[in-house]
Structures are given as structure tokens and as C-alpha cells.
Length: 247
Image (cartoon, rainbow, N blue to C red; front, side):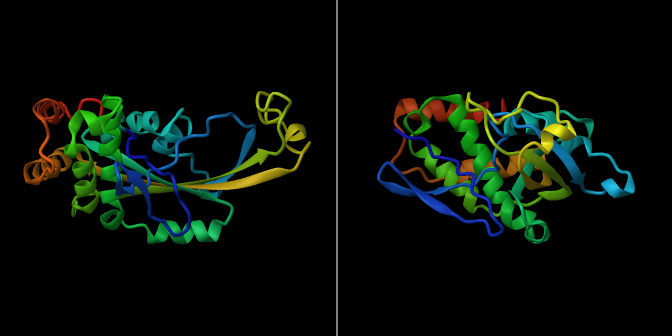
């Protein structure tokens, strides 16, 4: 069976979509897009507060230099400032700085955090077993849906950051972008037309104990239909007891 898919759909207006799951419609919880899979030659031409002499914040640098979203999140959570908090990153990219600025200004932790929570909970269940809908029965779908609909509290917008990159256009014979492994010299960057990308990041955190207590409330109040089998119930109890290992 298919897992619930995490859709990475971001625009100035965040859209919700649906997918088919065991004959039912299930919300596609929009998770932040991961890092690019293939390397591309680029140069950083600007970033927030660069003109005032500021450096890139440590949390943003860790995120931008990570291989994927999950490793970036865990790297930030390892910092002393966030050891007692869970970290979530909202990411939006595009070529319209003003539109992205409006998106950032309109971001609301209260409204958007349930999506973050549901996506990370879904990832936790999906990463632990190959087919979570088989392993956990109705618990899997119900938990993700309930987390997305819950009124979470305590999430805080801690910081935001933006960066402007200029990428070289074109690709080589092997399919990789031309010059992907070459230094970002001015000669290389001007040898072919470039594309520009603005990347906006919003750092959201929540106290770990507070998050866990709200999740416990969700666990206690879930109404599972159909009732999980004995094996599924055992798997559910086990994952509840160890939920935050690898979360």
C-alpha cells in the first residue's frame, strides 16, 4: 500500500491538495522542500542584512549547507539555543522578492504549525516501518489527520532569513549542470545565462515538553475505526512508547 505522500507545494499562496489513500481522500500535508539533489554552480549575491555587515545566522547556515531537510533540522536542534525545543523550517523560493516578502509577513505560527506537526509526525511513522498503514492500521491515518486539525499552542516564530543565489544555466553531456564541479569564478558565471532564485526561510520552534504533552492528548482522545488488530495494537503501543526516538 502507498504511504501518505508529503507534497512540497509552495507558492505565494500555500495550496492544499488531496491524494487517494486506500479508497479514501487524505490531505496531502505540505512539507518544506528538501535540498537540491544535484549540485549546481552558484554564487550568493545577497542575503538579509548583508549591507549592514551581518553574517549568515548559524541556524540558516546549517540548514543551507545540509544534504536534506531532516539533517538540517537535526543540526539546528543540536545547537545549545534549541536543545530543549523542536525546530521547524518554513521555506519558500521564487524569483519575485516582493511576493516572497509578503508571504513571509503573512506567515502565522498559529495557523501554519498544525501542518508542520502533521508532516513531521507522518515522517516519523513512515521512517520507522516500510508500510505504516499496514503496520499501525487506522492509527496511522487518524493520527496524521488529527494532528493537522488540532489547535496546537506554544509555537513561536524565532527568526527569518532570505538569501539570493545566481545559478549558471545549461547542463553538460552527463546530465549535470555545466560547471557543477568547477569553482564559482566570474568567468564561469558569465559564460552562460544565469537564473536567479530568492530563498526565504522562517524558523519556528516549540518547547519539547509542551509539544509532547499536546501529542499525548491526541493519543488519548483518538477514536480508531476500524479497531486495530492485536498485532497492530501492539505496534501502536510500541511506537507511542518510543515516539520521540529519531523524531
